[in-house]
Image (cartoon, rainbow, N blue to C red):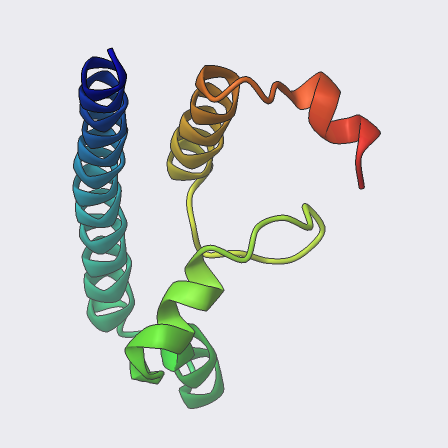
Length: 113
């Protein structure tokens, strides 16, 4: 009986890991596609001043880890984040679904800081 339960738990964990990996793959592809689009948009704009071009290309000149931090830094709604709303919603929805599936809905999360 213990081996059967262990097998079922392993299958469930494997399924969760596969779901996270699949989501991550799609999410990163969407982020990169959006980033490439915004980069091409900036590069094709000929009438920007040097200062504005420098400000708009800062994200693309940063190291990869800093770029991902800029893109995913949208917890504070007041900050200017280059990540579009639909990609933000995609991540927040996946997080909510995962937490609900794991038995930790937003109601229980808000009770524990």
